[in-house]
Length: 520
Image (cartoon, rainbow, N blue to C red; front, side, top):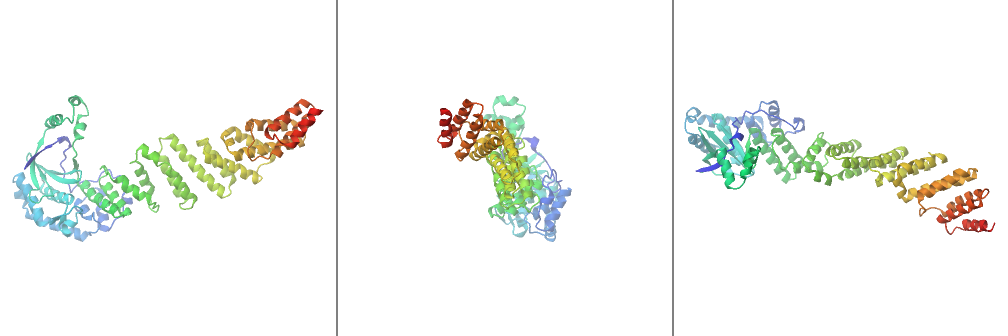
């Protein structure tokens, strides 16, 4: 049986699949939890570059020990000796492929099962495309026959390239599971894609033509490490389906350890599901949080930005401690390092949480300072405004400010945080303080200071009192200023009465003085 397959020969690699160095290990081995000493020793060997991929394949299910693995290796050695390799390698490629294929099916394989681990080949004879490809590869490697394992979506098979022939060795058909194919040249591939209108004539001059051609080839040439990683990734998905989330994560990490450059489509879901369980006992928890962010688009990141508020609420409810909350803060900062508005939101929210905590613990200065810090990030932030107002109220109630300091302090906040005046409770506080100060200044015969208090109040309030202000106190302040002004100017006194009536139009004291000044 023959078929035609585009080659793109520049991607073809010939390797010995069971002697291969572990490279680019982005997952620290300290993150991995092993089922037994045999699995751990196999991974330690991989980390050191002295790799036995047969043992890694056997270890993938987590239930085989070293003595059993050695026994299975011995069984394979006996089968290999029975092939009489010295004679076999001198025969045709078809004869070599047929002999390996038939031997494996007669002496090792029993039944095809979709969900299968490599160790099951020895336990029950059950196999699937991954475990079968690993087994074919083992014998071709021992014979020194150039070959490679190929992954396409949902399937793995072996390609043998020997004596200018290319043969595919499959696992799914025990009768006709191997056949020769004719590899196309690059030019033949281009002509085929032109005929199918997958590329245009204009693209032939594109410097990225090889990448364009490669995009139509769904094959991935699989190293031995990658084949083991597929085993672990498959087990991860089985675990995920069974809601064994920690086991799913561990098997995924082992896959990434062995093949860090592979594209794991399910990685975000596997890691994200584990992250959601909030198992902070693992020292690499936040490292994986950062990894998980890398799968998110900018839009998806922004959709998850408000989750930072959730972790703040957990902290205030004593469900996570300060170190965990700080770690979340660092994680969100890193995720949005290139987004200034998001960073402002994150920092402002943190100041809100810390300010709220300070208020709950009666820490006045910290409450106020966190509110100010929050407003420095987002000037009109409602939580920041509330903290500042709360902090000011706590200072006044605790007697931390003298009368003169209160007024000066409020002037500072009015100038630096004008949006505070949008809060009725703050407007009321400012009005009460300015009116009280005006009355006290009059009583001390400090008429100019009293006038300044009322003028500032009118400028701040914009002609209307807060709903909760005491009109009697307003009337008292204006009447006292008017009374002392009358000594030098009746007109000025009448003006202060009229200004007071704008805020307390029905007050009897102001109305009486107005009538009195008119008659004199």
